[in-house]
Length: 299
Image (cartoon, rainbow, N blue to C red):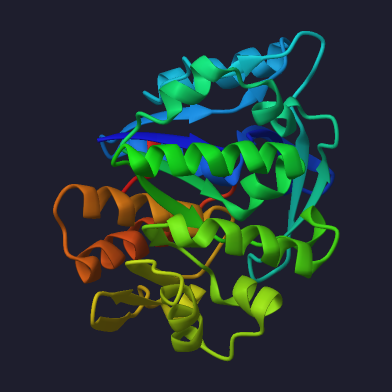
């Protein structure tokens, strides 16, 4: 199975003490790509970077993680975006962004037909609501065409809703974009809190039913410490999260869950079994600072 993950990786500054920050790299679909690759999945990351030393360090890090980088664009004279993480006493985080001129936003404006043809041949395309917020109307139109072409060739689509209000002019604009994409999605990874902001879903069952109404075969509604609801075919199950976990930093909890779930499903696990694998990895991730935990901390 060949997976192409679309999105943006940024420079990450994560508070490590009073007036002290650690530098790393992260972004929702990139985080998922790393955790997929660490579980033996064949994944390429697709984005646009600059030609600066930080972009070069990103590429080296991804290659060290066995992520394919052959489809990454590099735009002369540009630099990737930056975000800062600050955490409260409970490990919940706040994000601050500097990313308006990040070249990742121009991926589909700059993509030529050869790149789109290569992407359409992957078994899976993976992207998120944050990915959608980057590309603008023209870029999203080209992405939708790519999705249709990929599906026509037998490829499949995995989508993490990951709604962030700051990325959109208003919620109605995000809903319109999501609803154009959802009929082509095979596996959806919504987070209940995000979906309640966007659609006012009353609970996980309501969220799953709404997404299933678009024809999505498999919906996994993430609920943080309350576990997840999986809805596949005629079956629905609540899978509890691991108990007695004290978070240090909840960054990338959902991204890592998605990776472990998808890796398990693509290697033959049942949906409940895959959800348990997702909870196991997410529990390890939230016990460390930053989006990407050391390889030796992988469960």
